[in-house]
Image (cartoon, rainbow, N blue to C red; front, side):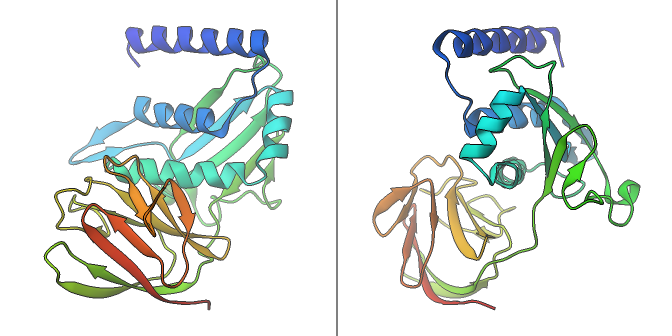
Length: 252
């Protein structure tokens, strides 16, 4: 990290701490998400044609902040892991494995502050089972580590209606599928009004969800703009001038 970036982060942390103290504002998940994204950007490096980023993030918080966040957002860690994966994929970054998020109660962190420590773990270095703590999610030093669970989502058949009127059908099974104009998406759209990385389909806790990836023209379900939404049969997703119709949905 360069000296300018370090100075910027210092003043940012100072402002956030003072704001939290003066107005007693509660930390929000989006603040943690943005810190993780910045840590990913700061620690990226080139390896040939690839940009490698860390896949393991320890988020250090004051005890009271962590307790409040856990009470309000029980699925915070897996949600942050989902967001980190989407951010990495939308930027074309390479991960050694699916992101892992640890939430750490740290008495050295001031109320309202967030400290993120990022590390990279390659599958070869990690070895079998190294991506999951041995006691079912808890490790030492009061660190709660969560790994993105296996896919738990219904299989669905979608029909793509392109801007020129042509159609095709494809199936999704809950594994993350990015949608957009860029050729590295799982579903590449021939649509000038779609963003390069526009949206993502993925499964979570038995549902198939659509999440917008900060697209220019937004993602729409049944003519309503959405940031994230669980899908059902008959739903019509509009991305640019392309329509995706959920024709069938079947749980395993």
